[in-house]
Image (cartoon, rainbow, N blue to C red; front, top):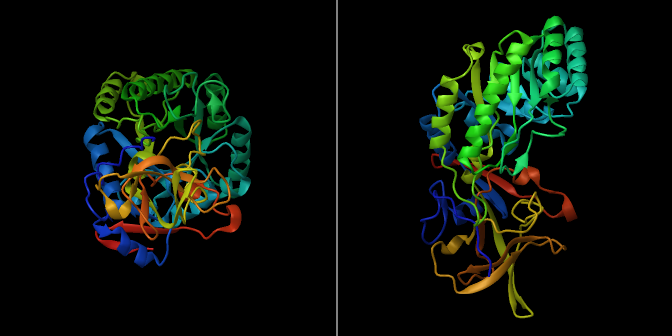
Length: 415
């Protein structure tokens, strides 16, 4: 038998039928008209924003990283709660504009921006986080053709990395950003070209559960921004310190305490070099804001035994939720927080593997976990599923039906 990850505290104490945003999961299935589906509780997202504001220095702005969950209703919700948005594609830009975001507070990062995406970003007044000298030249040429002064920042590939991060975005040879030694020359060329240079984007890693490592990375980023500003001879208007806040997925994970991060960041800002006195600082978070607000729900289609082992076959799997199957960055399959949604809190009486409908042994939502007895028609819930879920999965694999998405906010359901 293998352990499962910790059920988020917003759901952990529920008994009987799981409720998401106060609505029973069976009722949500009826409203969706099918399973599987994702359900996002925006009340949890709002609570995360409030927790961030309470823990972080007042001077720190909060941006939502759209790539974590680009559902239109989720984006629109964060437009009203955060200070800005960060996106990673032209498709996300279209959604951000449709959500009514103030584009002056939107930034666009990504190492392979296409010319139409760059053009759209410049036209809307979005800040481009430049990832190379070539991209800078391309942006300047497009801006000249449009007759606009482009808003440009430079994504810095720092010499350091975020220790213990799930995905390392900086330090060493990386496809992301410009190596810090080459940044001053690039920024001076932007200024000489008449661009509206906005500052630096320093993103060294993501999915960290170590507050000390995050604090050290932030302090190092602030010091690096000051060093670069002195070399350039001009202070940056903004410094995006990236994100890095993780959430627990597996039994080996502990919940991140953000209070010491806020305390350390407050001290780092107070001690910053005078060259950064007027600089605005922001953090961009996605997974930490929306990850625990989402639940993936599938229905059991079959209950079968093979060689003495029990399998519960569900109508959803890795084509909708690649991360939960262990095939999205995990070296070894470790179980996400999973429960039988109709029997929350019930005593576990058997051990089962919850498999999906795909014709591949990789399609497992949970491997050899303890569960209360479950049968055909029961619902399975995979928690911590609000970020990098449906849009990070091979939805067309084997041609199975797609998953619905449901947004719950103040008792109202949007499908």
